[in-house]
Every structure is written in C-alpha cells, then in structure tokens.
Length: 140
Image 1 (cartoon, one colour):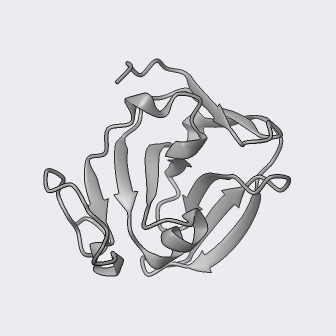
Image 2 (cartoon, helix red, strand yellow):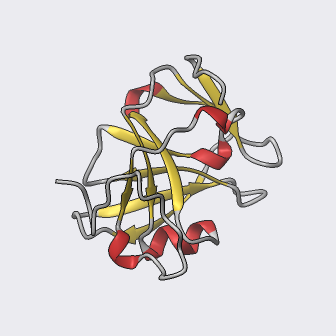
C-alpha cells in the first residue's frame, strides 16, 4: 500500500474528466445499497469521502443522475458523459462532503476502508471483511 499524498488526483477512463482533492479523506467506506450496486456493476461501491470544498474539477464536467435518498433529498451520482466512468457522489442529506469513487483515483492503492454501510442490501455471496464495522443502513 502506498502513502496518501495531498492533493491527490483522479479522473475517468477516457481522460475527459480530471479532478483533485486538496484535503485528506474524512472517511473511507464500502456502500452495499442497491443504487451503489447498480451504478458500480458490482456488489458495492467504494468511496473516499472528502470535504465538498476540497473536491475540485480540473477538466470536464460529470453528468449527474439523481435518485431518492432514504436520508432525505436526492443522491446525485456523477459519471463521465463520454465513457460512463463513475466519478463522484453528492448527497443532499450531506452537502458538506463529496464521495469520490475509489476506482477513479489515479493511485487507489492507499484506499483503506473503515466500514461497510447498507449491509441490509448486501448479497449473501458478498464476502465482506470481518474486520470492518458493519451498519445496516447509515452509521449513527
């Protein structure tokens, strides 16, 4: 595992979108909710959560798709409009943070998940780490 260096950068698969975070993550997690499963194409989505003001687009603009959130308001999932790579999630219920999709990081090797959320939607074949705290929905 390499060491996190701030600022850190990332982008989409085709290069149309580039971003940086000027702050360290406040949280890193795996979300197992059905919306994250559908948008990732896998059993969960992995996120690096940073303060919203630290997430800066350097090039391009994500296209956002909205879905209702059980926490209130909508969840806005941002994808590259050209290649479809998932980039960032902004939730109306947590306007102070941006959730960066871990797969979009230039160097995801430093990602260190701290919890599993929405385990109530996890599939029985999803082999979660027993070392991580589990939350049926959102952490308290």
